[in-house]
Length: 258
Image 1 (tube, rainbow, N blue to C red):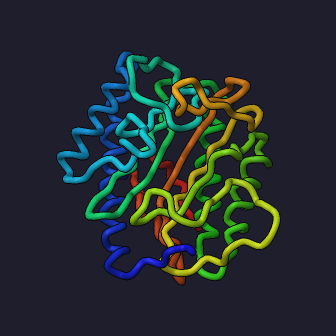
Image 2 (cartoon, rainbow, N blue to C red):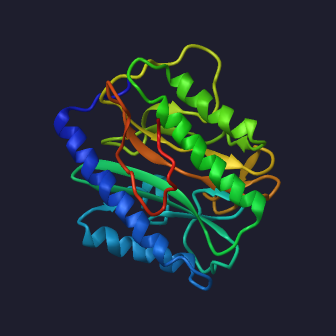
């Protein structure tokens, strides 16, 4: 069953999501050649502590990081360590926090300096696909419409969606019902209702959709080792316009739903 949040729970979701997006903004400012992903992870931990929240990822199924930091061909679930960020990288920051019992979850892909033209296009299309999906997050719509909108935007632009990892409901738990694939699965899907909170997160590959998991048992990479991009917002379904609970100015483009 897909949880429907009460007015009080929605207020708490707004607060946790606001902090998650603020931390993503702050962490993105320090991304530069030479900084290690461990230093980035530790900064995020300090910001969470200062904000009175904690990581939703640390310890989840024994995940060892405070945030996920994935570079270039790493799709999601990268772990902070000794690797140094390089000029021309794309860095995916995935931030999940728990505040007052509710999870805020958001992600963005940050280019480090100049990046290749096709990779820049990959980022633009991935973010555009996110907003195409958000536009469908309205009461009365089928979940398959949301998923299909993402897939259509990605594939009409010549890229591919990752199928093994998906978006999800979010609230008291990091992962709630429903699963939100970035493609239109066959069959009848749930009808969206006001009060649902969804983490919509296209993961898009420059090349083929296939992925594999590295020996650390967490980091997901593209099978062809070509770059991948990831953007995510937590969204509240309403009877009108969807509300982007993790909206931010600096690490999002001017794209919006609608």
